[in-house]
Amino acid sequence: MSNYFCMGCGRGYSDLKIKSNWFLVRHGETDWNRKERIQGHADTHLNETGIAQAEATADFLRDTHIDLIVSSDLARAKETAEIIARATGAEVIFDEALREMDFGDLEGMFIPEVNEKYGDFLGRPYKELGGEVFEEVEERAMGALHKYRKDHEHKNIVIVSHGALMGLVIKNIRKIDHAKSAGLNIGNAEAIKLEIGEPCDNCGGDLYEGGLGGLG
Ligand SMILES: [Zn+2]
Image (cartoon, rainbow, N blue to C red; front, top):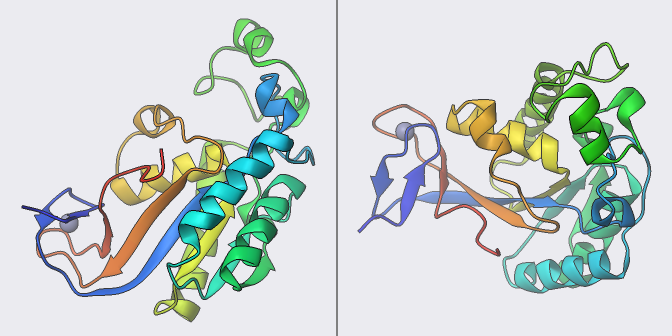
């Protein structure tokens, strides 16, 4: 039976030497999430549900020996990170490279209206609307992850960020297309565990997972 799956090629391993565990955590719910308003760089706060979601994730992470939390500096991520910090005792640092995609003129608009006017999530003309394009977000996110990885490979780290950015990270690591990663629909305060191990025999990648969305 396989306990670990290579994120680069999907090969399963029953046993593997793991150096550290990383958790990608999406921020908890905000009122804009609930009302289906587009929030990228808009600085929205967690609502009551979001706080409870972050507390549940923090409880789950309490005994995972987290050494460091790196978070987007937007309020909804920051508040999620601080709740996790209280439970784990880990230090938090903030990094603007982990901010959500900038959606330009779409910020604050209601998703059904945007879908009608500009097309669905994957097809909208973000650049023309003053926002970022997926490639830019993927590049800054992966740049940040590589930087933290270089400095802290043996530490257990929680990365607190946002839905679109996390989808692009998963796309990059799993080498899948964006439609598939966007379809993952990562939930509020959901944690995705990445395990850093020895290089995979098949593809040379060294990130493994035991299954997506361990928390549901
Ligand atoms: Zn592999």
